[in-house]
Length: 213
Image (cartoon, rainbow, N blue to C red; front, top):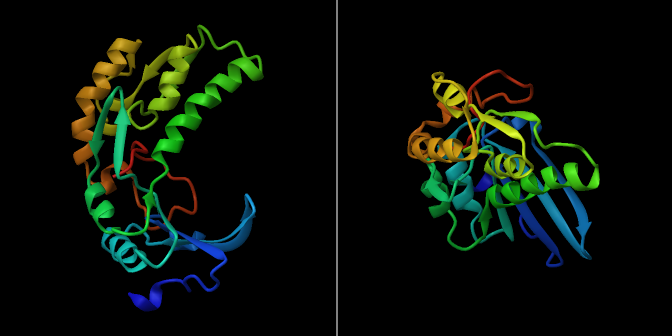
């Protein structure tokens, strides 16, 4: 695997960040940019849905770069006050012992809830009483909670989109109960059940719930 790893830390002043993604390699890219007065070399490596190759790349890059990102998959899922390790999540986490590995889930939850607040407070949108369909409250808990807090009538369709069975669930308490019941099931689902064909995600595809492995 050594020959597949990017050129690492070519200059001491440049921090290297690599995203290992389960998505298509057709979207691989690398760029250098300045952030907060520091220079960063950022690269994406797609594995076309090959979990074993993604793990091997993470092991190869561990200790060789400044930060690692996991794309197209999460290590864990947090919703309704609970957290579940997702399938292959521990495998990804164990691959990195020195370099920090992040999957963006913490940022996603915080930003999604804040987006709803911005819609109401900064943009002046009247959200209270509006009907909102959330395909996956388990995967998009920050957004779901944000709409609930804004007074929206939220319908969570986790069962419909993840299991192809059941009707959407409405109301905060019912949604929380539903998420807590489904969380352990979703966490055990194979990646291919939750994402259709990850070998080519260059175009949108209809398919299952977008909760990560």
